[in-house]
Image (tube, rainbow, N blue to C red; front, side):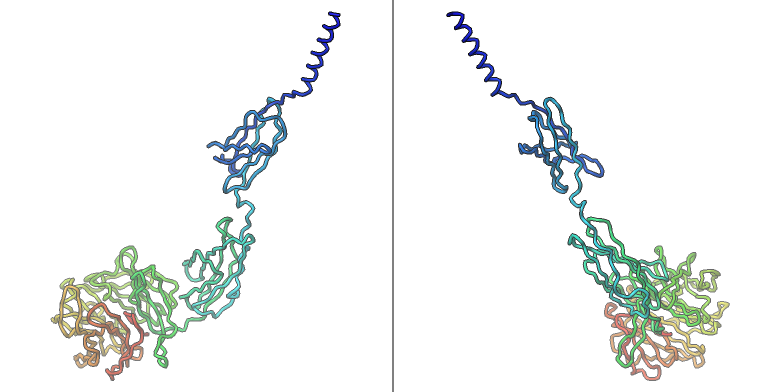
Length: 501
């Protein structure tokens, strides 16, 4: 009986143990480690959020891009890596008991799938078209597949110099370009960008502007940055307005005192270069700019008054450097001193006669006064003294084509001041044969000055600047008949230093 009881207890314990093994199942644990890097550079990505599914546990990558999950139950998992600026990435992982599983995420920039704008198509003007105006509207087309905003960059080159026009940050598909040159072929191209992808370039298209109308007036205006700009124009007498006005120089360079030579068909002018003033030449449309002087710059008193002169055949120029007068070939060769003042006075203005037999000079001291106007021959001998021993300012030399007359200005008020203000400057014509000066500004408005006179091509008229004697008012270019001093008509406002050829 006791033996039977013991057997029953053993069987009962065995059954209990057997049942316990069926209901208690111990689960194994594993580890997940990994790293987050950029897909192209493989640089680590810090602070990316890594979420484990289905547990939804989350950790963040460290400064080196590493992350870690410890004591993860064995099984199948999905791991999600995300960070602002990157495309969300998923990786599968199988966790095995006692095993460390390593996962690497290569994350793409969120713009990886972004597409660039379509290649811009240049619509207007038609490629190769000619006879275009100096102001023209450029039109093109482009679209962005992802509807991103597009900005454009316009680049324009030409066939006469190395200047490149660049316009940045255009948001429309049209742009009006102005102040082009006559008879010039232009090449334009558009670059489009969505600020995500690389620029997309259009093909190059070309157009050509209409031929030069051969403007006969040349003058100077102030640019917004206070540099001088040279312009050419004709004048419409019927409408009393400028016609075909063209900007010949650009405001990034200070250029002034244009002088056209008919024989060479070139315009000579002064320009600031390397902190000096030098002579340059250019074509009538502003192309082919060439520096003439180099070793000896133009120098003297008041660069707004300094003037130079062509030889009649256009092969040489004369100019001053303080008290010395030089001649130089238009290509910059053959520099030669031909005259020097006896008393050290500065040569401020000069004009070479049409037959090249004499030169008219205006000299002054370093304050702009003690002026003298006289002529010399090519050996430097004084021929005629027109003005000397007077007080006040003078200038504006121009010899008539037959050597009989000399145009000049003189402040009849004889006023002198440190700022060289002129109070009552008139235009005079000196007759060499009669040795008489005639005032032709008798009908100018009181309180104004007539300055910078030049004979008209037929020498029946004079072109000049008139302005208030306050020194700060608007300057305008006028035309006046020599025989009728009442016939004064305004041509160009806010303009100075006229030339009429």
